[in-house]
Image (cartoon, rainbow, N blue to C red; front, side, top):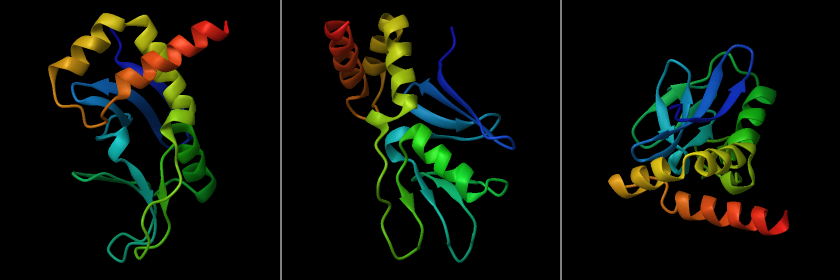
Length: 143
C-alpha cells in the first residue's frame, strides 16, 4: 500500500507528501523527510545562503529551485517561509493546501491504516487524523 498522499514535480526536484509512523511528512524523492507540522522554508543563512527546507532535526538544501519554484512548494504544502535569519517563519497553512486535500483523500481510502498509524506512535503533526476526518465529514455533508 502506498503511503504517498501527494506528489509535486518542480522540474529539477520532486517532492512527495507521505504518511510515516509519526504522521504526515514532506519528502524529497530519494532524500530526507520532515514532518509537515515542523517544516518551513528558509532563505539567507550565512552558512547556507540559498533556499532550504528546514525541520528541527534535518535540513534539505534546495540549490536548483528558483524563487518561483520555492513559492510553489510553499503553496502546495502550506509551508511557512522565512526570508531572513533575523525573522521567524510566517505564513503557510497546511489545512488549506492541495497536499492537505491529498492527505484527506488518502485517509478516506485507508481509514484503518490511518487510525493504526495515528494510535501507534507519537505524532509530530498532532491532530492530523482528526482534522482529516472532520474535513471529510464536512465534504460528505456538502455533497
